Image 1 (tube, helix red, strand yellow):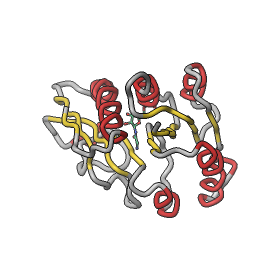
Image 2 (cartoon, helix red, strand yellow):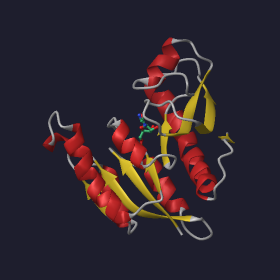
Image 3 (tube, protein in one colour):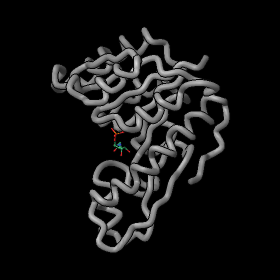
Image 4 (cartoon, protein in one colour):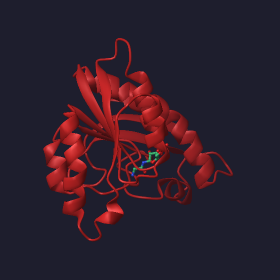
Amino acid sequence: MTRVAILISGGGSNMLRLVEDMTGDHPARAVLVASNDPGAAGLARAAALGVPTAAVDHRDFPRDRAGFEAALLAPLLEAEPDILCLAGFMRILTPGFVERFDGRMLNIHPSLLPKYPGLHTHARAIEAGDAEAGATVHMVTPELDAGPMLGQARVPVLPGDTPDTLAARVLVQEHRLYPAVLRRFAAGDRTPVLL
Ligand code: GAR
């Protein structure tokens, strides 16, 4: 059975969709949900589904990214994941951490990468007058939001959209995209999922 750990920072709606999908004939199971924020609402939601959780508060490691990552790594290594999914995890990881999960760390990003890596993706798409927005699941490499694409979902940008209305439309598709990509990836298939 393929073991999947998930890192979150907030509500964890994408994490929940992944956990809920990993039942029955799915080739993987969720073994840990961890967060950099002990108050992340997703932690309680994961626990309610019976998934072990861990929290390492990044604020306990001011100006010490290496110390934070070492503390985060401890419960992760204990859980022995084969795949690590970032799902709304809002801390930048160092190349050293990324290399430990080389080829088996996935991230979901709320833009049609390579457009708009980083933050404020929906505001930037609206500002640019884009007709389409969306989300991308990609392999994590040391360069931020730049690894090989594993799946993409597109939505229209509608007249009158605000960053919030567009984010909500994209999130609906994220919830379809990430489970579809993980299912495929856990089965050893890296053909991109295009929605
Ligand atoms: C999602 O929209 C995800 O794409 C985004 O954060 C949100 C998390 O929502 N991720 C990033 O911006 C990564 N840089 P969730 O906690 O409900 O899954």
